Image 1 (cartoon, helix red, strand yellow):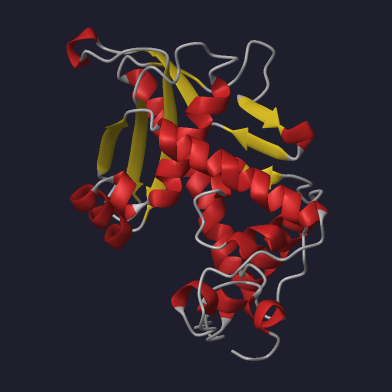
Image 2: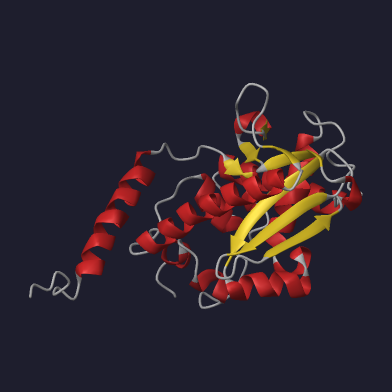
Amino acid sequence: MLDFNSSNNLSERITAFIDEGLAKDRNAHTPRDYLGASRLGVACDRALQYEYLNAPVDTGREFSGKTLRIFEAGHVFEELAIKWLRDAGFTLLTETATGGQFGFTAASGRLKGHIDGVITAAPAELSLTFPMLWECKSLNNKSWNDTVKKGVTISKPVYATQMAIYQAYMETDIPGISEHPALFTAINKDTAELYFELLPFNAELAQNASDRAVRILNACEAHELLPRAAADPCHFTCKFCAWQERCWGGQA
C-alpha cells in the first residue's frame, strides 16, 4: 500500500511553499514612508527611527514565515470580531463613506494612523456612548490571560498608547470620539474567548506619544540617533530587536 505521507518532511515542504508566497506578497508592498502611530508605545526611540527610515534589519532577523502567518491569521480574527459584533446589534463602521479606511495623517504625511473601526450604536442595555473608537487584537492564551488580569494599560501599554493617540487625532474627522471611551476587543486565538474593556481617553498619554513622534521625526531629519531604551545589548528590549547588531555594532 502506498504511503503518500512517507516523506517525513512533507509538512515542512508544503509550509515552505506557503511561506515563500507570503514573503513574496509582503515584499511586493511598497515600504512605509511614514511613522506608524500604532508604534508610538514601543519602548525604544532608536528602534522607531530605524523603522521609520526603513533601515535593513539584521541578517536572520527578517519576519519568519510563521510570523507572517500569524499576521494573516490576525486579520481573519478581526473580520470574525466585526461579524460577531454586528450580528450582536452593534453598528460598527470599518470604512469611510467613500470606501476608504478610517485614519489620519499629520506632520506633513510623516505620521499616519489607521483605526480598526468606529462604533456608532449598540444594544441599549449596555449603556455605551458614541461615537466610540474600536480596536481589536488577537492574542495567544498567555497574553490574553495577562490582559484580562491586568487590563490593557498595564499589560499592553503599546495598545493603550495606540488608542489614546488615535482618539486624539481622529477627533477632527469624527467629533466626539475622544469624549467617549474606546472599546478594546481581544480574542483568545487558542480558545476563542473574548475580552472587552472600555478605555477612557488619556489626553496625557496621547500628548506624550505625539511629542515623541515629533522628537523621532526631527532626529531623523537631523541625522541624529536618539538614545537606546536600554544600556545593555542583552536587555530583552534589545535582545529581540531586529536592529540589535546595527545598533550595538557587534557588542551583543
